[in-house]
Length: 135
Image (cartoon, rainbow, N blue to C red; front, side, top):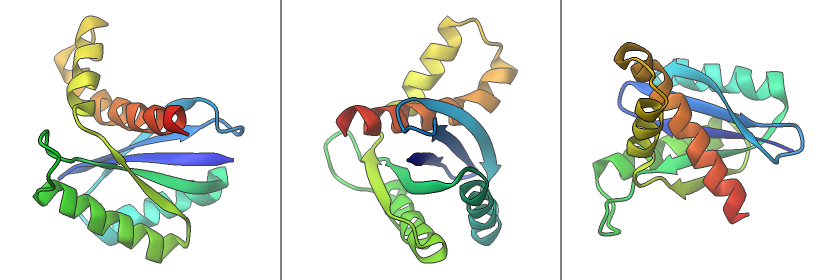
């Protein structure tokens, strides 16, 4: 079963996907998030292309466990995905995934320019891996 992992931000959505057996996660794409309908259409196309059966969305809960505007936006985004794609959508705590992704890229010697492009995709991979580990 293929699972899609999404890291929705204000401007971009990091996308990761599992292998066909649902065991490992790989970064797939970064989608511009300037228009919800456009982003949903791109995600729908990815789901059709890869036969995705479930979606996991990062939920940016505050460090003290409360929800703020970013978590509310992620929940709204997840609800839009459920409605548009008619697939199960789970929310996963994504505290510190972007920071973890940034640190990984810095330690790997990735240039600042390339880090900007890869950080969202790697954060989606971390979200998806944490979901797979929890499962």
